[in-house]
Image: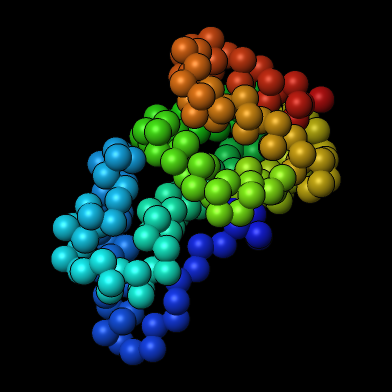
Length: 207
């Protein structure tokens, strides 16, 4: 995630406070898994967690931060999963195979998330942080693993690029892979979308 997008909670001064925060976040996780942003409310969170509004406000600062925190953890897990697959990719397989695998993993992960949840996150963070130019840059964490993957590959199909170049290319790739889902574009997740995404990755990262 971008360094300037932080979701922080008031410091817990005793173990009981820390436990209540954990309970509230667990309740938020359940609500986010239900994927209905209409339920991302203080009332629903109070009912699910069993804590009063006053207690939740003390633990969270801003109620919506509980939901933002959960969604942010999901984004981080998605990037971590992709980076793990980078490291495990067979160095004797070409860039085409790499691109196909990564697009399929990305599609599978994104399809598990209601686009309304993704838009909820964007809208809330935009309101809280004036949506800086770094908002979408959580994808940057893939640059270093990719450079290492390209160096390790033996097929002569990967371009050897710097971390800076990989960072910029992944930001472009993210728009092609992810944004159609968020924007409810009819092409999202179709075979044509997959073809375009794979072809673009091969063109950007290949020789």
